[in-house]
Amino acid sequence: MLTNGIEVQKYVRASAGRAGLSVVFEDTNQPRHDGKTIFLPRITYKTTDEELRHLMASTDHEVAHDRFSSFDVLKDKALDANGMLMFVWNFLEDSRVNVIEAQEYKGFKENWDECGATVVDSIFTKAKKEPTTVSKLVTDLIHWESRVSSPYFPLMESITSRFTPRPEVIDVLNNFSDRLDTCHKVLNKELGTAATYQLAYDILTELGEKCKKELGGKEEGKGKPEDSKGTKTDAEGKKEEGASKATEVGEEKAEGGGEKPEGEEYKIINVKLDKKDLEKFSLTMPQDGSPMGKVGINFEPVAIGEGTWDLTDYDKFIVVNYPKHTVTNGDSEYLKATLKTRMFIDEYRSRVVPKLISQENFAQQVRRLIQIRAKVQTQYGTKRGKLDQSRLSRICFDAPGFNERVFKQKIENKTLDAAISVLVDMSGSMNGDKAYYALASTLLLNEVCSTLNIPVEIIGFSDGYNGFREVSPSMFIYKGFNDLKVSNDALTDYFSLSSNFMAGNPDGENIIWMHDRLIKRKEKKKILVVMSDGSPAASKSSYGLEEFTHKVIREIEAAKRVDIYGLGLCSRSVRYYYKHNDVVNSPEEIPSKLISLIERKIINHGS
Image (cartoon, rainbow, N blue to C red; front, top):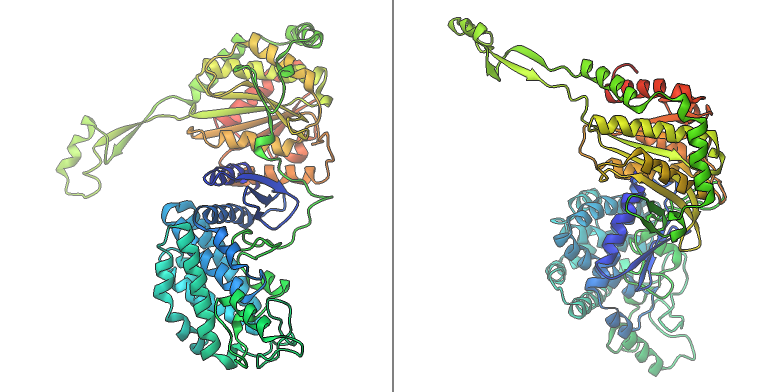
């Protein structure tokens, strides 16, 4: 779900931190890393749940390579990144680090098994449509490796079991199963990587000798293959005219470490894979001269650009915590009072306060309403509970079921087992009465929740330039769940301070941020109230923002773990976004609208 986007961002950053790697989200669909930074595709409203799992699995996989693979060994071999030997070595090294990672990181074990099964199924489907030499060998290798790794990735093994490998190839691969299992147990980076290299070379050598008809000769439709130096070779392994024997021997040493006898048959060890082969048949495609784990699971192409909206990196949100007097990704200006903040307070007190009933009277109304709904009830004639003396005579009857119901139980109403998050639009269009109404509403809710001991969090949202000089969502924390008591005067001051920074309102991102905090609460009922005056509109290009916001709200409503409620301030636009909504057009309406909200969402009375 898109609402899990921030959790995914936190997960990949925490995982990357295990290897001292940083994370950057960019406009590409190919996860990769350069040894210091992991680059991942941005999360957009088009990102699927499966792709979110891929992001986590890919990150863990890359971290595993950094922790357990030696790229110095890879560099020393100087292999062609597109060669078959490099491909198989990468495949076996992937297997090794994945098994090691799965043994110590359960989250990776489950994610990789689920994601890998999907990719393997896709590879097998493509292989059936294009039965080339490369596709056949790849599916044979996957079938074999999945059986060896099945204790760790059972779902992948169940997918590959539907495929029948070629007997002559699988017989050769089965001879190396114990060696692969031994590689899985080597934790030393240099020894483990060298072991998978030698295993890859030995496998390809034996396959080339025992399966010549299946694996040797020309690739279908590819013409003459090239060796590692670019010299073309015919099916019998003879060089074209002009190629020297010295060059031939040097090439073989570069690929396998041994001399190649003159006239020896062409072996699969020298097969070259083009980019299309790698894209179709690789779980971790070598690319840009940095192979072996430098990229993760391949995504299907998704257009990123105009018409889409991506979730801002969690670490780039501007977070102003007024009770704690801290600012993340912003400067201290957010905490400084100005002439404008003084005017905001004066205008609120003169234009809105006289039209409101007192908070104390409002809280009393709510308390009486809740007390009516929260009376303790007693259920009689139960099989467990406190003994009910008026029903003791039942035990004299020989009537199973009836003679057991001699107890009574108290049923406590869990009406107040709730947590409320209030998210207030503080964009530029909210200037004036709308912002004052929002403040009045939150003051009443704060007073009620404080009186009834209901946890409440009140946060405003807008956007602005962060410390990275990028436009990012701004979150103004007026009262957090951990702030046990924030006075109404303090809340008024905090609202006035944030009024200096009223800009855009990228609602979807702010709702995700708020939802991520609320969903962790232990209360039975979780309520998210969004106060807004209109449609989402960011300070940067807003292409795709409306659809992004729609999807976020629909996901929350469909999941039913959080009740989301739109309260429109002098605007009916909330009716377009929220299934449950209401509109406030004047200060006098605020108390009755909030009473209705509390009755619907906290007491669960009515629709």
